[in-house]
Length: 106
Image 1 (tube, helix red, strand yellow):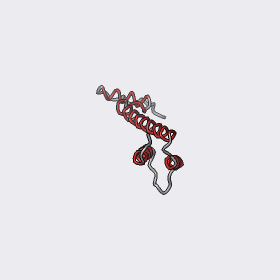
Image 2 (cartoon, rainbow, N blue to C red; image 1 turned 45 degrees about the horizontal axis):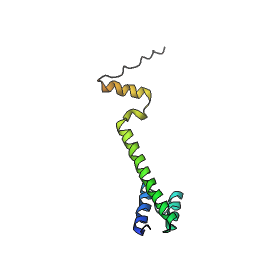
Image 3 (cartoon, rainbow, N blue to C red; image 1 turned 180 degrees about the vertical axis):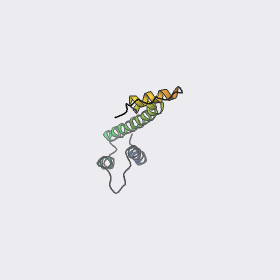
Image 4 (cartoon, rainbow, N blue to C red; image 1 turned 90 degrees about the vertical axis):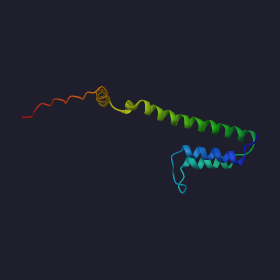
């Protein structure tokens, strides 16, 4: 089953949407490579398989982005150091961290 030009264009645009945004005047090497691959995609069996692989890759990228978003949302203290984590835990139960004692210099 051959892919229509509309399907090819849709897959191409979906791939570009998942990449970091860059102006069209200076595309990244990966954008250029994707463009060259899609411009030479033929309607042979191999071309159809490549398009199916590209669709799977798009789904994988979207899933990874959603996973990272959900992980950050439901584990907000994941990217903080130990001291900050303890402070946030104490604030959660209604306490404040005591001030550290510093000896006076003479």
